[in-house]
Image 1 (cartoon, rainbow, N blue to C red):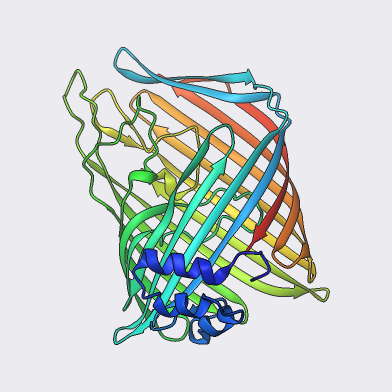
Image 2 (image 1 turned 30 degrees about the vertical axis):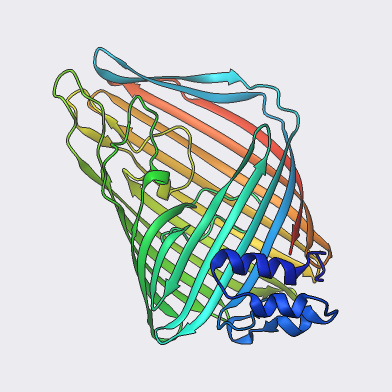
Amino acid sequence: MDRSGLPIAGLAVFVAAMLGIPVDGVARAVDGNPDAEEAALQSCPEFGTGFFRLPNSETCLKIGGQITVTGEANFGRKALYAETLYLAGNPFIIYDLLPSEALPLKADTETIISVTTASTTEYGPMVSFASIKGNSTEQETLGLEKAFMAIGGFTIGRRNSFFDFSTGLSFTGGYASNAITTLVAYGRDVGAGGRVTVALEDNKDRRVEDGVWALRGSHTLPDVVVAARYDNQNWGGVQLSAAITHLSDDRVTNCCGVPGDSYGWAIAAGAECRTKIAGYFGRFIFGTAYADGALSYLGAFPFATDYIVDADATLARTKGYSLLASYEHVWGERLKSTVTVSGISTRTRTRELLWAPSSIMATAGVEFMPATGLTVGFEGNYYRDMATAQYFGVQGESSTADFSKIKAYARRTF
């Protein structure tokens, strides 16, 4: 039995059966043998720590997961509010500061169970990964988070976008692309530490729309993503990525029928640097992105859409950028602190409207590991949301909302 108290041999039998892996050897070894677990589950050092080989099979298996419990207090008194609409066929927006609802404390429990398999083939290692994620807040949810397979440079399934680099080193991620999507990709190593990947990625989970200004079409092409990455074991790594997305809208305008299609795009650069400061290990993350009609590639932002359908049925694409800087300082084997600062700014211009919202976020936190596999942390978040608009050349008022959050969390990994 491992540290988490889970009967690994029994769980291995169940998982192997689900995956169609022969389990007779496991069942025979477990039945009536006090040393069955050690005898049946042989380590697979060629695939890394935590993998074990099932008897009568060339497949190695790794079972893991984590449970995270979070408590959050919101100290905001006002929030930025924006309502999108059309007046006389022209896009219009109403925005103001409104008193925020009293949410003194919110609790959340997140559970993730993952299974990784690996085996050696004539085309190189074949790896598959699947994870189930459950959340318990006001409503309980449970569903498949990721499921993909990789072999011979090809990857197919549902996983993190190859465009993404990092949302920072804090518990709460900053403004940066962070999407799980269905994709098909091919990657090729270049030199020592380099890799170039080309992917076709489903944009269903990347569409930033409101149903009024923007209602993405039901039939769109997948996004094309290209990423070049270099990793160095001594100091860190860098990545450059780009994406093209197909834009179509399902609205039927009074003047011109269905809007014509358009294409949005995004580019990003990220870097990680590991260093030593005053005898302590530290890690920096830097990232920046620019997008035109593809806001999800900048990070989650509630006050803008990928585009606005203008009065002449053209798609006025939203342009914007995001910046992120994050630092992690390791004070000892069981203690570290993090600081992350990020921002996002967007502008959408139609014939009569200019809408320009932006946001800044700052996060500081500390984490302590009282035991192996157990992490407890405390974090503070500060947000500053800003917005301004022009309509028929008339400048509207600038609205700014400041609010802060405090979070405490505990995470158990196994």
